Length: 329
Image (spheres, helix red, strand yellow):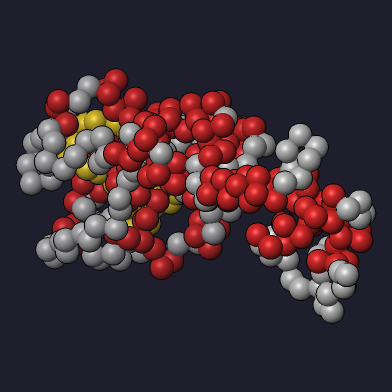
């Protein structure tokens, strides 16, 4: 005679002996609720076991064990959901080739379609499945240490500097649009070589870039970049190319000496550009169209800090609609 178990324990997978007992009780005509009492299980658990592991309306303990084991092994592969959805799989391939991280892709999928795919599942798909493994080469590995730059006296030739410590809180908080950070990249040891002027709007993270013939023309290039937009402030480092900062006729601020990390937004942007234009590259080998394509790709890449929207979406939807007088009050 079957006796009721003394206590219902916390849920765990059905054991082989429990399935054998369940099979016998079903054949004897016991109800699911009665079987649950005998096994010390929740009736819903018994019902789910019969439904999931039964075969053609019948429940056989050996077949149930085989089905359960197969399902559990398969469920360990978290990329299963991706393989089953061709639309998501195609989207992941397209965006990883563009250099998007799994976290950005997962966030963007949820934003665009409402479907949920964890970034961990994407990593599993990349590393554990033959189809996904071809994408591993597109994963970015960061965290490389930067070499400490030698000290210089360049900052001494910049007049009327206001250091970042005195920058208003409204800029530091990224509350408004129109505050930019600026830097240059190129072969800095050769001041006659072409240089890329890079500027990034702090709130939207929108990136602007323009080539100039010489490093000393950086402010001229910056004027061209910013002229179409309402600008409230610009933050620089202490390079000599920024000596003409007052020509911009907006509030300007400077990082403390040897503290370029204080303008982290534009430093990050340059790091992204370096993925396409490695160090020691000659900018003369890149056309204006090449530069525009690189910047456009960066601006169309979703960011976690923007809730997986892209800088271009934020910039277009909000920044361009703001009146200059409202922006800078």
